Image (cartoon, rainbow, N blue to C red):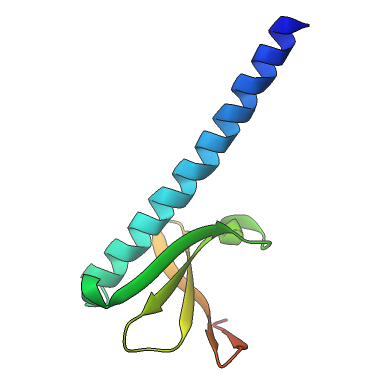
Length: 98
């Protein structure tokens, strides 16, 4: 029984570590994309937060971005190595980029 509990704790730790690493990697990739491809200054990015969404597939992990001179919140995900804008929220309304 003790070995099973140790195994279970290690398994839970590995899952937590995997999810944390996925979120951190995605967040870093999105910020890098915004700086290099979209030519946004790093100082203009107020916040970036990776989270687990309730969407399927590659949209399961997403990053929210707030910019200094913009009142919108943008949501990005990564699919096949590409960073894609999924939606943005403006004045409490979500606008999905299909």
